[in-house]
Structures are given as C-alpha cells and as structure tokens.
Length: 277
Image (cartoon, rainbow, N blue to C red; front, side):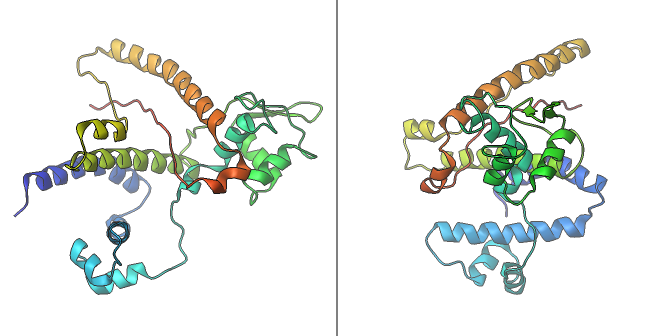
C-alpha cells in the first residue's frame, strides 16, 4: 500500500515527464529507449545512495532498493564505453570560451570586458582555445562562434566578441545540452530542498542557511496584452540580472592554475519564462 507522499510523487511525476516525453516523441525516441535509460538511472542513483552512506553497494542491495533484478543490475553496472551527459558537456565549449574571454585577465580586463585578439600568437585566440578547450582546433572554434553570431573579425584580423554567453535557439546538440542542464539543475535544487526539510536533527535556522533559492511568480488572470507586456519585461530584465550574476562569478573564480585546489562543484542560477494553457 502506498503512502500519501508516494501517491503525490507519482502524480507529480506524470506532470514532470509530459514535456520530456513530448520532446522524445518529436525526436523519434520511443518508450523502449526511454525505459532503458530510466532503468540505468535507477541503478546509478541507488548505487550512489549506498556509497554516500559509507557502505558498499552490492547487486542485492541495489536490486532490493529499485525492484530491478540482480541480473539486470549486474549488466547495467558493468563499465561500458558509452556517451553520457556530464557537467563538463553541459557547459558547451562555446560558452566556456565566451566566459573565459571576458574574465581571464590574459584575455580581458578581468571584470567582464573582453580584449580584441589576434588569431595566433602569444595570448591570442588560439592560446585561449588551447587553454580551456584544447581538444577543439582554434579554427573550428572560430567558425562555431561566428556561426553563433557572437564573433566578428575586422580587416586587420582582430577577433572581437559581442557577449559573454550564448543560448542556442536552434534544435541541435547545443540546444539539448542546455535543456539537460536546466532541467537537471532545477530538479537537483527541488530534491535537495525536499531532503533538507526531512532532516529533523537540523534547526530551522540551519535549514534556512542551507536552503537553495527556488522561487516563482505567476498569474492566471492576465489579459493577452498583459501577458505580452510581462514577457517583454522578462526579456528585458532577466538578461541584465544574469549579466550581473555572470560578472560576479567571473570576478570571483579561481584562476585556471588553482582549479585543482578546490573540490569540483557547480554553482549557479537560472531563469526561465513559462506559459501553460
């Protein structure tokens, strides 16, 4: 027999999955492929949960936790060479270069103003690409930035960049990376806050300190004109806020030669506008 919270979660899951399933169907991905990924993620998360508790996660424990047979768990947990989304993949090379071009003191003023760069030479565009995405040829990165509409090259060959980040509006691999990044981070924050509320050993003050911001505003009573005005306001106000946030991050980041001194942890904030009939 399921508890009320389990019933509520399953009901919420239907709502959460609908936009994802719609996108999968539009892209030609069916249930069997989705189920295979879901089963794999169940095993991965259950394994990680046991590891966090300081205990080895054997096949029987993961099977008991997930309801997936030991044989299937064993098969899924075998190391295989397959492409999976990772945090480094979610931050696209284009955005990595744009960000560092605005905040690495070798290529900017260190506070958000990028320098014009030669394509080759000391502290050039090629140096920037080699330093941060060394597996991509500088020529290919230049083409990608030009195609994105954020890079210009003058008659003297100097490269100039127009903005510190880029959001793909075309349904391509970069768009999917952004989609995965946004959905996974929002989900992570919501689950973290829910887990935090369940920790009875923590005081309310301590929970308030640890709480991760998740807020929203909405209305069901705007006219069509009012909704359009609100959307235009969001389109104007949100980029200014994100530029301030990006500048704060850039000015406080460790230089590349100190990255290994800090534990890897992604910290950020995201904004999105939504409409639902």
